[in-house]
Length: 198
Image 1 (spheres, rainbow, N blue to C red):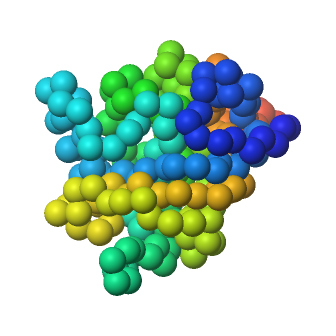
Image 2: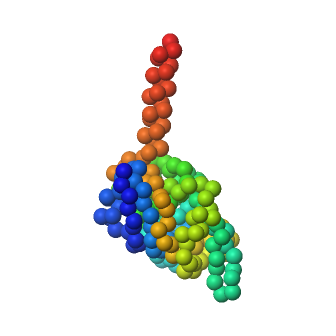
């Protein structure tokens, strides 16, 4: 398995070198979005309205940070990943319309996201759940926050990060999905055990 240090913006060539099982870090700019931000972003994109933040060749982080205001800036105290499966209904269309190349989250994502990542050349990576303070340690600064009216966790945070990771490539641009592979292996082993017990 390979290990790669990527810098934003992310190119198709970079994405296509990544395979399930690789470990990566990301340096540059990423943005967060959870349920409410996805919902609003899709309204914009479906109406052909420009988003107030850059997404093309970008990195989306499924996270609702804990942040506090310090004078004229923000400090991120914790920024663990949220469960990505709950964003499955948005993600394929968002990938198509936004031009993102890397999604970071927790747990697996479904067939629609897998298909979109293959078609539009992107990857889905996982970051360790419950490690919000560790994730925050990679954040150098908050560039800005958009849609703060949604609340701190649901707002879009544009973050400058340094070697954010390690991130595990769980779905690659060839359509391979580690979660599907594991489930298939479990099913095969289950069937084998059942046959052996008969």
